[in-house]
Amino acid sequence: MLRKSALVALTAALALGACAPAPGASTGAAPSAARSSDPNRLTLAEIESAPGMSTAYDAVQRLRPAWLRVTGARASDGQIAVFQNGTRMGTVEALRQISLEVVGSMRYLDSVDANNQLQVSGMGPIAGAIIVSTRGR
Image (cartoon, rainbow, N blue to C red; front, side, top):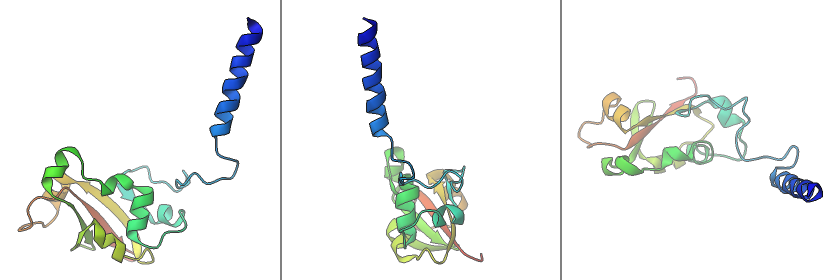
């Protein structure tokens, strides 16, 4: 019986080891040293630590994909708005037009904060906002 238990334990250990990434392999996530502790903020260091991206949309899609989704109660509030340096740019599709070369940081506001903090008069309620700040601002 002890031999059977040892065999089961060895099999489980090998199976778990096979699921782990190879040493030095990328998991697709930003290194923890660069990752912001705030899930509603995307820092320049974090953006720069994830290669292969060219637009603000690429960065959000890879590093904060939840920012792009309108779900649950937010779905009735419209779409997520994008603001760059205080100017409304449009919906999340506007992020595709913003080069990462100019992005200093980004932050996300949920529906309540976005509607309370931003100048959204005449636009109706929004489901949230992604605020893009350019470098030097």
